[in-house]
Length: 161
Image (tube, rainbow, N blue to C red; front, side, top):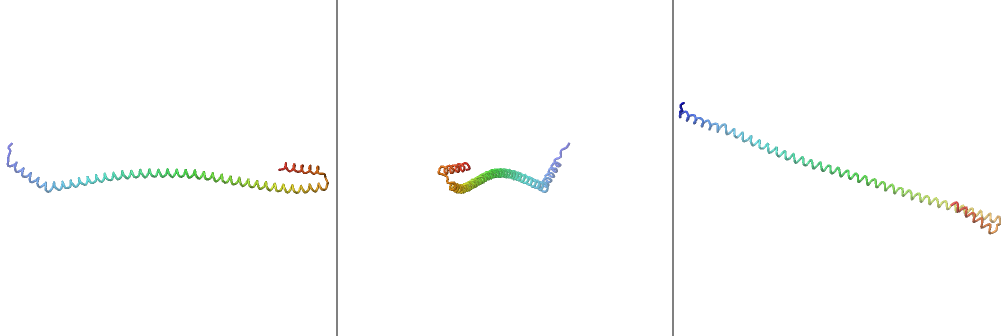
């Protein structure tokens, strides 16, 4: 096997010319496209990371909003319970007041009826006293008999009231 320097030099020069042509017209645009592709992938990764952090932030906001909604619902329930309890207490107080009013009204009515009965009794006593007096005058009874009649009448009136 014979090594020829001329062939080697020609092949080396041809390789260098081919390398320079490829460098200028093939590798440079190819590396440019690869660089653009690398930048695009990098931007997509950054965008994905940004979207992920925004999604995490949105999820956190939703959790806080849900927590706030639960707290508000709990507050509304507690308010409804206290309002219901207060209304029940108000109804009980109103019922007691109404019962007291009815009781007082009944007491006044009873007192009025009692006063009417006493007045009626007094009128009857007056009428009976006049009748007794007229009977006493008619009979011309002595003082002792007159006293007995009045005492008997007073005893009858005392047992009726």
